[in-house]
Image (cartoon, rainbow, N blue to C red; front, side, top):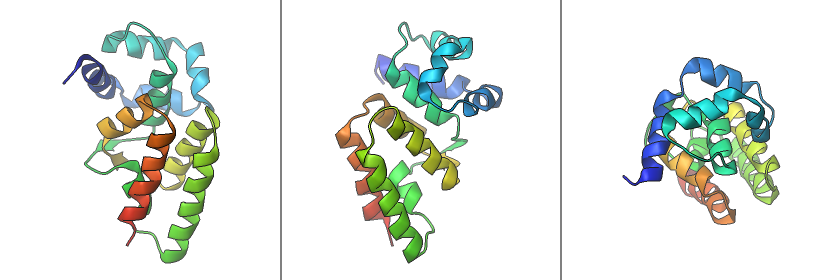
Length: 148
């Protein structure tokens, strides 16, 4: 595990329910910058410099309760009817066209709508840390290949 991965692991471990409740109230990741909680989380995890990468992770992690081996795309495809899968595919395609911070806000809305409570937090954090077109497309790929 490299240094960044260790810091991500620390953030995941120290991110308790009280902290999550406060962050869930925010309507954009950029608003984290106005709260000492954000900086304290980073400091406790050993992060020296705040960044948009950390904002994205913390903004989204506030809605994830448990850890398992599923990616976000696979989780979106779970237990959906054929009609629901088509709507979700359209939502993901719309999300792919958005730019920051609207794409992250939309991703969080999709997580809430799908009632995602459990997924691989480490893979999610890696995706959010290196947020780019390729990683956004990977969500669609995982969704399509997980459909039944």
